[in-house]
Length: 122
Image 1: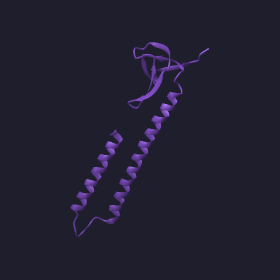
Image 2: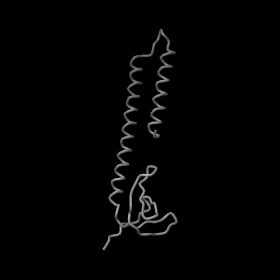
Image 3: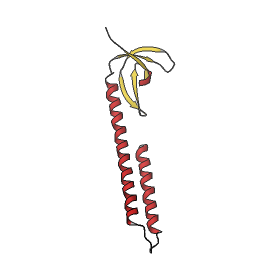
Image 4: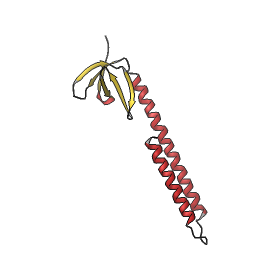
């Protein structure tokens, strides 16, 4: 289960607990105002919709990064290693690791921020 759905589930569970507790403990002579109740449900529904949009946006962004990274597969690039050494190599693959676009270049795995240029083959 990813973090977004975990947080969403906690929010949903807490909201339902609060709602049930509120209804259980309301004064029978002065029940919860129907407009307030509907307003709370509408706010909760809006929050769920926003969470779904955020999740869809994150998935779309991941796909976009992978598509852009895939365009570099087979290209010669210049990059900086973790040790700070400047190297040139051909991109073997691109993938998303821990939410970050990573390239496999020979024995090195580098992030997009480590690329310093694309080298044109003559």
